[in-house]
Length: 217
Ligand code: HEC
Ligand code: HEC
Ligand code: HEC
Ligand code: HEC
Image (cartoon, rainbow, N blue to C red; front, side, top):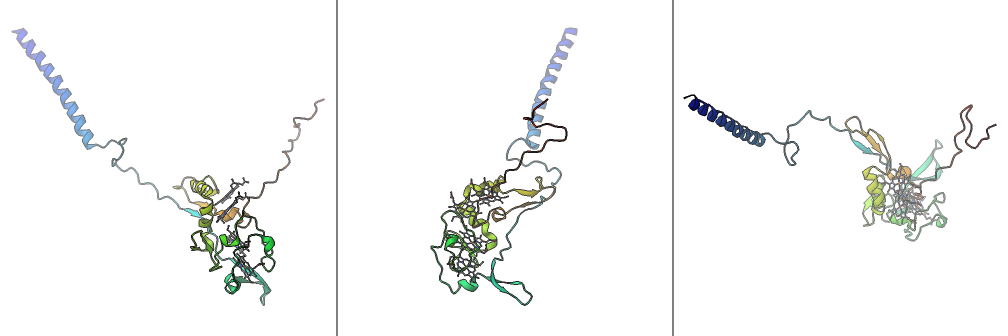
């Protein structure tokens, strides 16, 4: 009698444990279907707090108003600035010009050292108030970076990655904006070599300090 009850009780416990595991497994499966796993790629996950809108990265732009001093002065004594086309519309272009020493009629102050490029590699012979790309397309003076980029791909790539050209402002764009230089902020298009940094004297010793090579009595 007691053995019969014991058997039933034992069977009940086994059945209960079995049921428990089956339910637990089913629940795990069911809830994993419902609840997305945040570590699984391609899943939509619940949105956390909405991040602040990032501040902009602004590339400084040359003003694009490129003119030359005509050498004359107006009534107030200010130099009269003229647009490039004023003279060049009536002058035949000189495609072979590629050094400042060849400038004997005008633009004598211009220092030029940029590889073997002729002036008209960059300036537009059809419209001197613009620049031109290698494919002949005219670009505004304010967009000179696109001109530099087509011949200096590696530096432009580094620039876009942030390792060339410097920046000011915030690294974390949720805290504030960032300003980037344009190529001609640092490189003169006519003599682009970055000026060499002057070597300076080593630091002076602090009062009471001795230089490493000084004699000790
Ligand atoms: C006052 C007239 C005058 C103005 C304004 C002028 N130029 Fe010139 N430019 C000349 C003359 C003259 C030459 C030829 C220089 C020489 O051979 O000594 C020249 C030569 C050049 C050349 C060399 C290629 C070629 O076709 O001769 C370029 C490039 C050029 N100028 C660009 C410009 C740009 C850009 C501007 C405006 C920012 C400008 N010039 C404004 C008179 C002018
Ligand atoms: C690598 C491209 C490039 C070449 C090559 C080049 N220029 Fe320029 N030039 C420019 C750009 C870019 C500007 C505008 C600079 C700015 O926005 O301040 C400019 C501006 C000028 C100006 C007006 C401003 C100034 O600096 O006086 C003159 C004049 C000029 N160029 C003449 C020439 C002449 C002459 C030659 C050949 C001896 C020449 N350029 C070769 C890119 C070039
Ligand atoms: C048509 C092609 C062309 C364009 C456009 C051009 N460059 Fe160059 N650049 C050259 C060549 C070629 C050299 C010379 C490479 C050499 O001598 O090893 C050079 C050299 C340089 C150098 C190295 C100078 C040195 O002596 O160390 C710098 C910096 C430079 N360019 C910047 C610029 C900038 C900024 C612009 C845009 C205003 C520009 N380049 C536009 C072709 C170009
Ligand atoms: C913040 C200033 C700055 C800006 C902006 C800048 N550069 Fe430079 N660039 C430098 C310095 C510094 C060097 C290294 C000069 C050296 O080593 O003597 C350099 C070197 C170069 C060289 C010569 C590379 C070599 O190995 O000799 C080229 C070409 C060049 N830059 C192109 C560009 C172009 C194109 C842009 C715009 C996309 C640009 N730079 C923007 C500062 C700048």
